[in-house]
Amino acid sequence: MTTKTIDGCSYSEFWVPPPNWQKATKKDLEKDWYVQCAFFDPRFQKKYPKGFPYRKRVNKPKTIEKRKAVISFLLKKLPKQLNEGFNPILKKYPCVQKEGLHPDLPFIEAFKRALSQKKAIKDTSMILVVPSIAFKKHRKLLKCKTSK
Image (cartoon, rainbow, N blue to C red; front, side, top):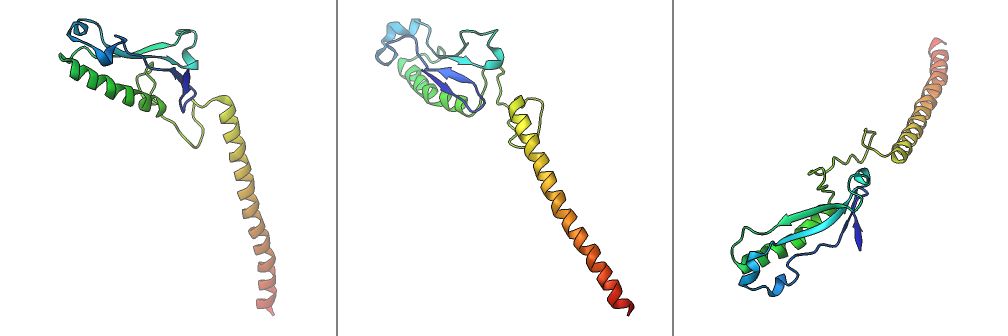
């Protein structure tokens, strides 16, 4: 199962080796512990066709209890980060501009925004034209009244 993020990317479910990490023993401390998922970014589909292996290692804590605590924390924190737009391939949060046009905006979205800006400019120019016409008419009337 994959989960979509706000910027059009997606990621798989997280998994933790060793598979029995919740019931691990001291023997399991010798194994490599990490939290991993496959991250899919449409811009990097050719480079990572099976997804980017996003992995956080948990080998520094030397006790089983600490490793379990860190893994539990990461299983809650990492999905939140990805859902907020963090891109592990770029290693940063994208600068999401909700308004205006910018180079990273997809074409369709840029076209929609440009069209709405054009409509807004046209609507405001009509608002500006109407009062100026009305003002010219009233100015003529004012001149006539004052000149008598």
